[in-house]
Length: 322
Image (cartoon, rainbow, N blue to C red; front, side, top):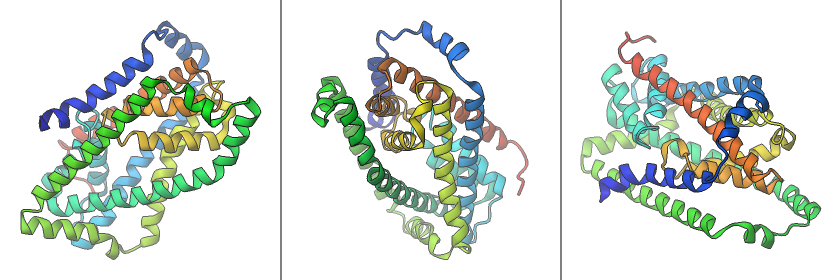
């Protein structure tokens, strides 16, 4: 049962949400959208920011490892991140352990140190996304209220428009998040049975205190999330119906999508589509257009992650370079 929850349920949930969202979808319209409606120059402009986010994450990870006497090569850290995200397309969340194993085998980095710094990274990311969420809520509530007033909508109208199936999808996503959290806690408990491993994990988690250049660490952290945001926001200009929405709406959709990918489906497939499409609809985008947007954007960005993942895997066969 535990194996099913860990391996089978996430992709099954993602597939179920996608099936529900795209049942009766006019698939023939995709080619027309790609050939006639889409502005490919904006998509091509957005892709380097997706690469930059992973590069900065690799450099930040190396900075966290340094205080513990671990000095893996820059390219090794970056390629490990590429491999991590690519492998998570196959088995969600497995990439975190895989990237630690990559450095252990290739650079001799202690697994406990690597895992500890990954935990630290996640804590830092959670703090940043919570701050970004507070900022977004504070500045978007007036905009959202003005939008509802100008369109004659009310909060009750929005909630009534949220179908019973939509509520069930939200509820199931919440259950999966809770189940994933329980599994992570059980893994950490099993890991803690080894005293040496526990000490290494503790050292890795506390490594942030001894980072040499904390300003650079902060710049890396902000740069990661700014790159993620630009990677997403620039795709708004690919379509006529999202281009006028502006950076503030993109920020709302970005934050909402970031929370949606907590549900451990491959690259957030399903929950991300549902969350971002819902936000776009709240700002006046037609349901079919919103579905087309999230399908095309997520697919192309996932292909980028897959290509980088293959590059990371192939790098394991090459000589280490610093």
